[in-house]
Every structure is written in structure tokens, then in C-alpha cells.
Figure 1 (cartoon, rainbow, N blue to C red):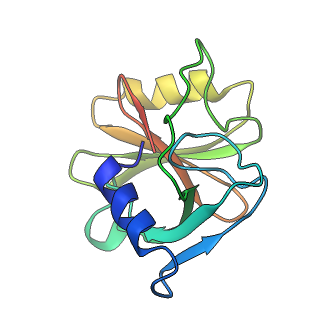
Figure 2: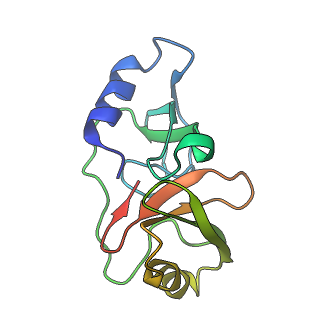
Length: 145
């Protein structure tokens, strides 16, 4: 999950500048709770995931609830927002891209496990294949947005 302090700053700045937009966007993936949005108020802001560093650092748009929410719902055996093909990007502890794979909903868990089994891999980013949007990040034992 995106750190609560990052979400709090984005929520506080919503509507105050061009980088923190207050909006609604039914159906978009939310990075605060890893589910799809309904018709509630959202904040759209720029975010840089922690895995890529140096030339691999990327900043992109993410949506979160405009008000604090309960966070991700833990679903036994399921992967959040993994109902369509996803790009899995593996990164080293130093923030370098190590490997990647296009994965489907039926093979996501196995593909993630295979990438994380490599001792050189510290974390895997899960992204949209069409827009390249960051959805969440997986380490050996945790799913984080």
C-alpha cells in the first residue's frame, strides 16, 4: 500500500495545485485499498514507486480515495486488481530492472513466485500492460501499493 503519510499529503493538497486533482472516476484502480473506484471522491496525483531508482525511476498518475479508507481487504489466495493481463517487473535491491513478464489472471501467482524465487530480485511491480500504470508492488511476503 502507498504509505499513509504520502496519501495524507496528497489528500491535503487535492485541488490546490495541478499535481493533486480532486475528481471522480468510476472503475479506476485505487492504490489506497487496491480495488476499483465507485462514484466516490478521489484524488489523482503523481507517485514514484520505490523499486526503480536512478535511470529506472518512474513517476506516474495514481488514484486514491479523497478521504482516508480502511485500506486493502485481505483476500485469501487472491491478488488484488489482477483480473486482466498484467506486466510484472522484477527489480534488484539496488533498484535496477532485473526481469519482466506479461502475466495473465490465471498465472499471476505462479509468475510472481517464479520472479521472487530469484535471489537477485527484491521486489516486483505489477503494472497495466496498456498504459504501463503502476498498480502495486510485491516483496517476498507482502503486497504494497
